[in-house]
Image (tube, rainbow, N blue to C red):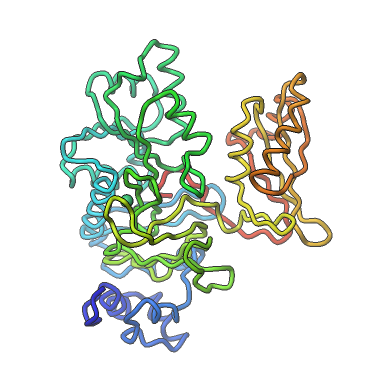
Length: 432
Ligand SMILES: [Zn+2]
């Protein structure tokens, strides 16, 4: 990096915040920090974290420009807890376009590609807008179909011959079912690549998970994970070698920290803390994302240097401590979804009188599949080294647990722990 330190993006950011951000002026004052002395990433670690709750309660204090310079207003999609609203200036939108255009290039997508956007571009989401702006910047063709509507998606694929889709992976499964029911030959479509948003397609070791495998077994596509969030306005996208999302160093500073806020060793799981660079409207310093992942820095075969982030292990507050092993719901989902006989399931976490976590899984199996339960426990033992309590019910009974009252969203993960933390942002698109 630049050793003269006077004009690094971090130095510029600190100067900018000291002049324009009421929130950070307060924070520096309260903590006796001279922002102009923060020049390196280790200096940065003297600054307290910024939390989601800060943005929820003091939104206006983060704004660094007059109101008429804010031209796009987006929010995160919290279904419980208050959503966060962020506002962007012209220059922030340009930065977002640059970020997403780079991210497409990392996935080997070029100006000659035609990209079908199978995601929401309105509803105050940043995601769809970011992909649109990025594709514009790249010079690629764009078809804005929006989310849902398998029939329209297929008609568009047949008519316009897109080479790239941006889609939620479980929706690709629906597209596959539609194709199978309507005699569409999945081996002969124009589509070569999919940028997968909002859901994991890989395990922590980067191999495809059950969902990723299900898709590629039927539809010969190259899948690319991308990870981004509204607060960080930056994306981490995989290259063709599928070894983690590449870090765009000019756009964001990344730290991974443990439960005590200390930076973890490379390759160890930690909570992602981000400092986006070059943001004008509402810049953030050391924002805690709540997402747990690992970072790797050995060189990638694509020639790009710098960090790569592993697939997310989970949300910080979803960590389950089971007989000395820490695990996240995603690992449990993946085991359950790899068994075709399991029709549905619900995971319930309780804390016992010793203060450790207990996990019970209600598994929906058809009555004649009961013998199969030992096979499931074997997979848990082999893959996670622990066996949760399994309770076998009929798929109908599990359905009732998943949709209590008039709940529309399946409650796959119930956390009854006494000391659970608040979490307010279920992830809908990759810019959450
Ligand atoms: Zn690479």
